Amino acid sequence: MPSQFDITSLSLLQRARSDDQDAWQQMVHLYGPLVQRWCKRSGLQDEDVADIFQETFRSVSTHLDRFKPVKEVGSFRSWLRTIVRTKIADYYRKLNEQPAGRGGSTDQLRLAAVSDPMAEDSDEDAGEENALIVQRAMDLIQPEFSPQNWKAFRLVALEDYSAVEIAEQLNVQPQAVRQANYRIRRRLRLVLQDLMEPDDTPLE
Image: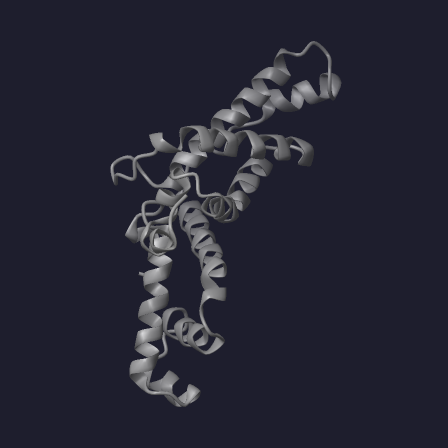
């Protein structure tokens, strides 16, 4: 288990690989909604989504050391997406192998007509999903900072105010705004380090 110093100096991925349960829960917090989204796009019912969700993160836990955060290989999101796609394909293959089960002939016809909604990863989908991950990472770290510093960060990072403008609003020095923005960005980068390419982070 990492020490308190390690927690502040290691990336979320490094901590999860070290069997840090808090880090693992944070990984599920960041990426769980994407797994559910991909499953639902594939036509799965809620109970099946829950099963694929559990199988996916069980596989991630087992094979996390295999993920290599190298630009040519792709982001963690892409790696995770491949796992989900495999689990969904396995599910449909097993379902098609059943004689006349669940849903009968109507269900079989529906399955035969289902295209693979995860076959292509469009730039639009990738951008939307990366933005979702960043937002959930921000939700994760927000309690670590004072409301005033967080407000200053959001105004600078998301609403494009200058440090001088925000300092006037909050009745603080511009340098205090810059320091708050720097500290929060650095913390956010640490959470997402090795999980996302810098170009995929909207706040960069």
